[in-house]
Image (tube, rainbow, N blue to C red; front, side, top):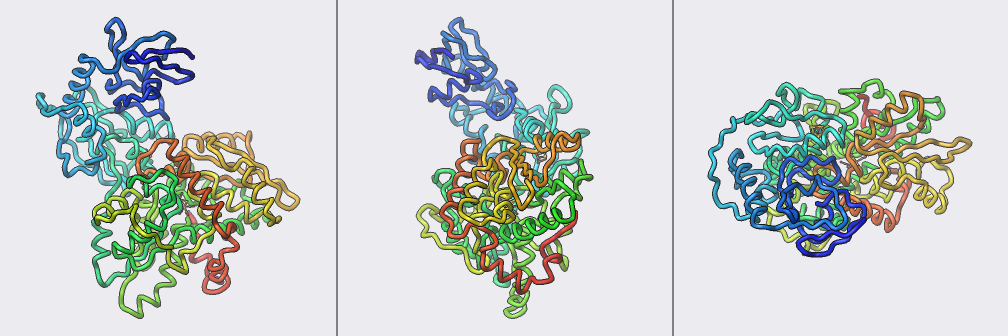
Length: 560
Ligand code: HC0
Ligand code: SF4
């Protein structure tokens, strides 16, 4: 706690972890590549340098604020220093900027513009690297890497995976998986958080926009969409809407303008999941296990278990994810329609997640040689397509998703944030169906941002122990406790990404406050939903009692 003087301005500080944070609080945009407030401080890019009274230059991210400290953030020397760094970075950087995936969103491009770098005086001495396109979710292009290490720290500190690291030395220094392996040959779980953190085009989401347009323009195809819960509260951000604003209806209109035949809601699939998962859980209570039952909807979590911890696979719910349940039902129901009019239904899922691309490609979800979900587009990809179409998103008149599969409940909407799946299942299994119970569940502790949350809920004559965990590094901690016998749970909701799907790597770039606003947007959608419990979704009820009767195992469940 104390007072600092930044460019002559008196700035009080209280608990900020470094001078950089105080500078930003003072309303100054301090440039950085390698500082990521949610991770450890690295101090490698040296863009955030400041000058003290004695003319000493140092990085503000690694400086602790001290009372009476006087610093300058914008001197002639600092400007020269920053320009030099940028020039050196650009010298060893593939400068195909106009055609780069990240063009317009690249921090190197932005800062080069901001600091007036107009030419590069140094020759490029770096070796040329091959792109790694082996992952179903992300593409790695080391030629565009500026060695800030953000991806390395995200993968290690947030996800506990440590797939990426610095390798070789000197001018050969590069970020890559161990032994220069391709991503597909590592334990990478396709979570994409490295791509979300990358300031340049060195790691990007696998772009499948071209495929989507081809299908939309094909008269023999009927393109049918589903939209995931978390997408609606983030898609507006790149059009100037605040994070958390529910733009589902505008997105439906935009997709119709782009050629969609039908636009449905993944929430419908989530309601189906709640029904199946709750039934499975009650069955396990009767049979006595295996406990804990882990939720199964996060594909990166499943991939982690398969690659590194297979002994827990038998604990995972046999429910397919809502996306895959939806797709299985859709393809089944549309068979007759396809036969009738000779068109083929092509199913696109819009997801906040890069791992969903990997999930859609899994062989468990292929039937008659075709995937149930033909294509997964991330929120970012659909934003790009809307921009390509020239649609003025914010001016659109919204329209509701189509029926029947456009109907979802409040319980389904909250799937998109950490704690939501557990809360939705709790609403189903707790016998008391009064309004008070809904509130008791809401305030039980399932909601929130702590990495691991534990809740006890009474069901019949039993007290259920439920845990919610997000961020794979914390999942690993929880598993270690379960293994050591120091923690016991009946049900555990797992989401690989911090804050759950609202913080998925396919979403527009955003830091924690934006992710929390998105979660609030989903809770708001639940508050205003007319139906709050999955068992009251009339379409789900009809399907389970009718066409799906006796076929739920075939269509809605999977064994990994
Ligand atoms: Fe999610 Fe899902 S909630 S994983 O986070 O369960 O991606 O939004 O679509 O499938 O519904 C992502 C989000 C989904 C699925 C749902 C679940
Ligand atoms: Fe690590 Fe996830 Fe990136 Fe794979 S996708 S390298 S697991 S951060």
